[in-house]
Image (tube, rainbow, N blue to C red; front, side, top):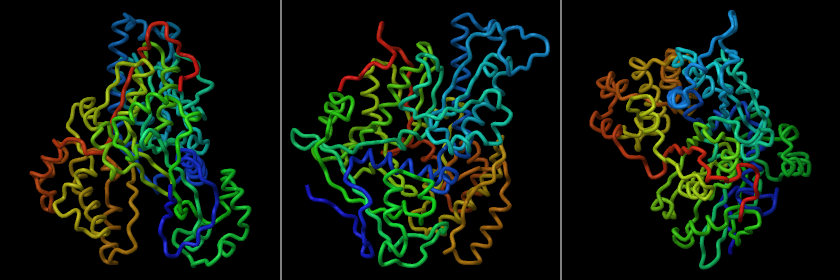
Length: 524
């Protein structure tokens, strides 16, 4: 099949690798991305858990209710409460109490989800039935990410309940079978190795990539804007062969000494027959592709599939369960659309749409029948007892949103947040991080900077945040003054999910009778 090269009139591509499947290069680039930018991930993309609290509170409320119901069914309510010896700290486990409640967060981000979850769980647990028994394990395969998450100031009050585990979610070798009660994976699957596959006749092919570097757009180390144009690679990188060796070895310590390059990689593409020896669940994937039109690419989230298998192994037989919250679709009509966005790039790193329909098929293949897939917003609203709308969706409802210049969009965002803050009050203090564009007219930039500095610390914490219907309509007239339309906002609050949206996949480990939970080899 013909090779496709990204078009760039200034590009002088130099090979820095060979053709490999997309998932292999994605994993490679991810290791480099987090090695170089672990402390600055929010500069490139944000999540609903990076600064906002409502996702964490919904998970905490749901978990508390489920544990209490389970304890009542077991008749363990009194045992869980237990009589503590006089003077014993409430955070320690009473000898009479049942086993600890082990919670895993796979891909722990900046620690905000864990901090808000534990704080809200402690608040809900007025009788000390649940929170004292919790051990919350932050899991990530990057040491720098774990250090940053563990250092989250709001985790300090929960220090006795928090542990860290440096491991990949697809292979938790040190975690024993059947020992975990709850697992959260927030926007993890989109960050994990994913193949792009298509059906062509009787064959199944996948996308291969080959990276080239365009030296003319490289930045000198530490700079944030293009410096000068370089005609040859040795002008930008004195030790070109050393750079290539470091890139191939994902030696991030060495790569820190070179100019910034991730966003300047030029990727060549071609399609080859899939080598099934390297892919599990061949039958499940092949059957799924029969429902997709020929030559339509779909994401096959192999990393997600691996985590499902590992979750089933480590979850206790009566565990509360596993939750993945991520962007994607379970709609075959959307998956059949050749124009759908299979992936995006943030800071040079690939982020893939999650194919929830295929993941569900794999979960079912593993013998788990109780799989629930629902819009994330609906899950949060039900858990918290409120109707929610994301700030992103509120902004998208603005009548002329599509015609605004980028700096005008920024101005609208900050003015909207200022108005919402009259009704919105977070239980946590956060200084909103919002870089002001340099291309904004000077007087507008100065006014916007002043507004940003005046925003209260317990207001809307981020552009990626959830708002309640009550908060929106408490300031509806002020929003109308900015140009919002009340009828459009009402429609947005009741709108169905978009073609690709944020979803919650949940399952409980109900394996078939006598089915092994250990590391049995999967059929392919």
